[in-house]
Amino acid sequence: MFMDEKTLQSLVLENKEILNVTGVEGVDNFNDETVVLITTKGRLTIKGENLAISKLNVDEGKLMVKGIINSLVFSEYEGQREKVSLVKKLFK
Image (cartoon, rainbow, N blue to C red):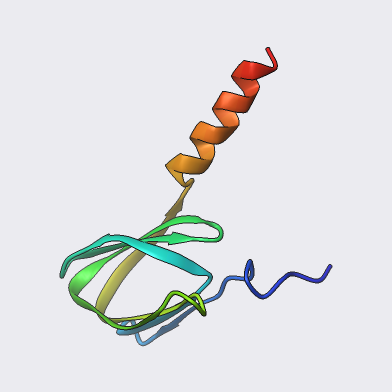
């Protein structure tokens, strides 16, 4: 199955220090310990130390984070979940 380049997502982690992400729709918030992204596949939370966003191109959906990366966690984007719940309520 062919996926549109806009919905395709990749994560490339180099030596726990450089993370390249595609499929980025926006940055929810960030500081030197946490970066929270909105991606085509949901919310991505990056945790670590001395984190910095060194490249961001929302038009292309690309982002680079540098620092010591300790964890990557995906969760469902709350906005999407609310829309589904509303549709389910309408058709009950």
